[in-house]
Image (cartoon, rainbow, N blue to C red; front, side, top):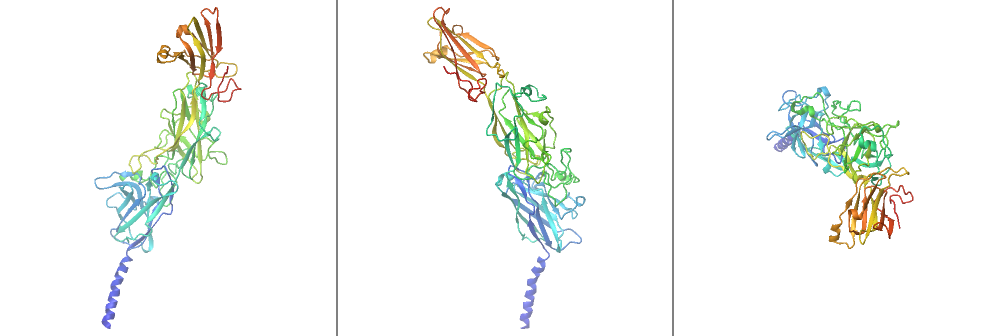
Length: 590
C-alpha cells in the first residue's frame, strides 16, 4: 500500500513539472483596437495598430533578454516603404515597426545593430513576401505573472484595391514564437481596417447645380475670348465667365488627409514628429520620430511624401481652346464653416507625390486661375481638413476660345480622383506615399460643336447658252448683337447625270476665309464650266445665306433668281431668328 501511494505521489509530481514550466512562458493575446477605414483606390493605406499583450515568463535581471519572433500574413499586398534593400538571402527592411511598451519620444531606442540590444525598443519589420512581414530575434524581457508587456506594430500599409470596397476587411494572421513564449496565441486573426469608396468626382454648374450632360458651346461664338489669347487677363469677357466646377467629395470622414500633423496652409512643408505610440494621427504619415538617425533608413520610417492629392485630368482639348482651373478651393460647392469659409483647404501643387510646392497662378480671377498644361493633368494637395466631418471641395473650371480662327469641334472630357496615380501596388523604396490606382471618368464636360450652315442650291446650269452666278453671304454681322463669325465655305457639285465620270469632272470648290459681312461670289462658267445639276455648300459659320441667278448669256431673254435653302444641321443658336426653336438654327422653306 505504501509503495502504491509513493508511486502515485511521484507521478503527480512529474505531471506538475510541465505546469511549472508553462508559467515561465509569456502568453500573448492579439488585438486591433483601432481599425482604420481604407480608401478603395489606395495602394499604400495605413492599417490600424496590431497589438500583442503578453503576460508571464520570468523577468531577466541580468544578461541577454530572450528572443521573440513574430510573423504576420495579410489578405492583401503589403506596401510599407522599404527602408533597407534586400541583400542576398536577407529580406528588405521596412517602415513597419514593432514598439515594445509605450516609450516616450526621448526614450525610444531604434535598433541599429544586428543582433539588437536589450536597450532597443523599436524594431523594423522584414519584408518576407508580397503579403507578409516578420520580426526575428527581437529581445523582449518577460514581464512576469503580474504585469503586461505590450508589443505594438505600427506603420503597416496595405494595397486596398484588391479588397472589396463595400466594407471588405483588411485581415492580419499573426503568430509568435520564442524560448519563453507560448506558441498558442489568443485571437491570431485580426481586422486592421475596412475598405470603402474614398472619393466621388463630379461636374457641377458654376452655381453648384446638377449637370445632366456636357455644356454645349459653339466654336464660332467666342467664349472668354480674353483668356483665349492672354493668360494674364484681369477679368472674364462676355460671353463667358466661370464655366463650371469640379467637385471632390469624401466617401467617409478623413478620406482627405494632411501630410503631417504640422501641415497647415501657412506652413505647408513643416513636418512634426508623430511619435506617441498610442495616438492615431489621421494623416498620410504614420508613426515617425524626427530624431531617428538615417542609419538603416530610420529617418524615413512613417514619413508620407505629401498630403492627399486631388487629381483632375482633362482630355480632348482642341487646338485653339484653353482650359483653366482654380488654384485653390472655391466656396461655392465646398463644405464651409459657420463663416462660409471652406473647411478643406487645398492648393494647386507643382510637385504631386512630393512635399508641397505651390504652383503660381496665371491671373487673379476667382481667387487665381492656372492654365491646364498640355498633359491635361492638374493636382491640388490637401493642406487643411476637418477629420471628423464628411467634406466636399470644389474648384473652378473655365473654358476659353476665340472664333478667328475657330477651334475644332470636340467634346472635352475630364476624369478625377485621388493622386498621384501609380501602378506600384507592393512595397517599394522610391515610390511616393500615398499613391493610388484608378480615376473616376472620363465624363464629357463641354461639347464644342462645329459652327456650320449647309445650303442647298436646287438647280444650277452652264449649258445650252445659260450661266449661273452664285453668291454666299456671311450674315453673322448684324444689328441683333450677334458675335461676328469667320470661316470658309466648300461647294460640292452633283452633276446630272451623276456618276464617277461626271463627278470627277466637277471637283469641290473652296472659298477664301469670309469674315462677318463678307460674300463669296462666282459663276459656273468661270469656275465649273459645263456643269448642270444641284450644289450643296457647307460653311464653317452660322447664318450663311445663298443666292443663285440663272440667265442666258447677257440676260437678254430669260433670267431667274432664287434663295438657297438652309438645311437643318447640328444644334446651333437660334439667333438671329428668335422665332425658330432653340438649337434648331435658321430654316428657310420655299
